[in-house]
Length: 287
Ligand SMILES: O=c1[nH]c(=O)c2[nH]c(=O)[nH]c2[nH]1
Image (cartoon, rainbow, N blue to C red; front, side, top):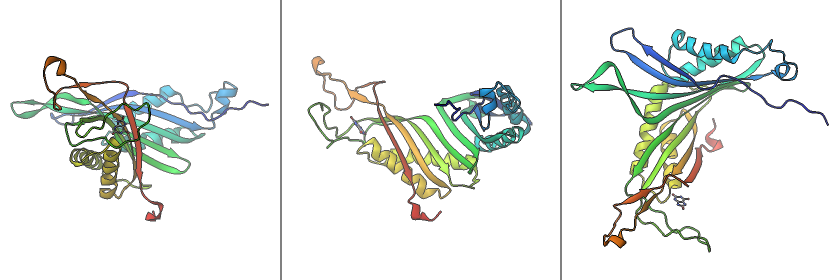
């Protein structure tokens, strides 16, 4: 039985690219974590140690930084599309490139009621994400966010579930619902919307829908959030979620002679329920 090389790709992961725009005294900052990956006929490098067609990962790293200067970063999507095209041009045997970008948001530090020109404070642990694939079947842009930590202190229940001899969970009529949301939405082919405005709108819609939907399960909240995004954004084909159910357990204060009507909880970090769902469009939508 012969042995052959299977799928392979290579690139430079997690280039931490920070771009400052300083054309005026009021600076702008874009803080990115950029990973590049090329695929194609790189068999010779694996089987014969022949690097002739291999654009070094070091060059990919350099291009990521050079493009932050030359092309600029108006949005992670625009930057990733430009970087991916360049790497494909520079690497004749490459048939596809994937560029993944996480962006960390910085807010201006407020001084005397105004945002400072060049001093910033990191906004939480949340990141904006994009993954751009330039390949054999065209270009796909998947944008999203991760580690968006949200909590509802009421308006959430979980009851009526399947029970067996191992089930101990009681019905909950009123519980805390919390998650660190990961969402990824895929743009329809050929769409080039205002990436930043669309990101802001989708994020706001996810948050508002989470807040205002009475939740009978995290699954129902995710479905409502996805439906809201697809109804409002024709340019988006589908949206996927991964949501850890960050359990908050009511603490038994009875030993101390205290009642606890949903006031004191222990926040458990693990294990957590992991709820994943994709909300998509029916094929007969015709596009
Ligand atoms: O929103 C929830 N969905 C579940 O599937 C589940 N399972 C569980 O134990 N608690 C919860 N909560």
